[in-house]
Image 1: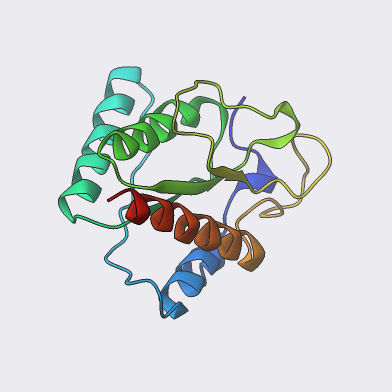
Image 2 (image 1 turned 45 degrees about the horizontal axis):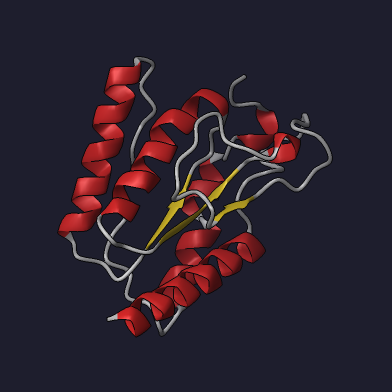
Amino acid sequence: MGIGPSTKETSLHHFRDPLLSVVSADDDLDLMGIILVGTPDVSEDKLRVSTRAAVMAAAMRPDGVITSTDGWGNSDVDYCNMVEQVGRQGIPVTGLHFTGTCGRFVVSNDFLGNILDMNKGVGTETSRVGENAVNEIDARKAVARLKLMMRKTEKKK
């Protein structure tokens, strides 16, 4: 398993990232920053970089975090760890991930229930570049989910 053509985000997609556009245009949210994290090959490195990304996010003291990945399979190890580490800080976390028809991550934890699937095709893979990348509808769903989670967290306080 690995990243196939339909889950690859093109350079143009990164310059016009729908998630960034939707979040930055939302008056209810204050975009504090973007953390970009690579996907190392070695499991020990995967856990280190994903934990450091979560620590960095927590240091900003956000009310919530939206995560996104353009990988799946082996990339799930670090992505899922980062989501878990953010969640363990008590920060509402949601995100976007290509899950596909397999319907699950390669690894699991208790903080993945609010991660949304960005699969738009039938099956796990197509040959169209960027077909399963984040679009505006995916971004709006993630924002709505985060706002709901933040409200629930606020009510508990």
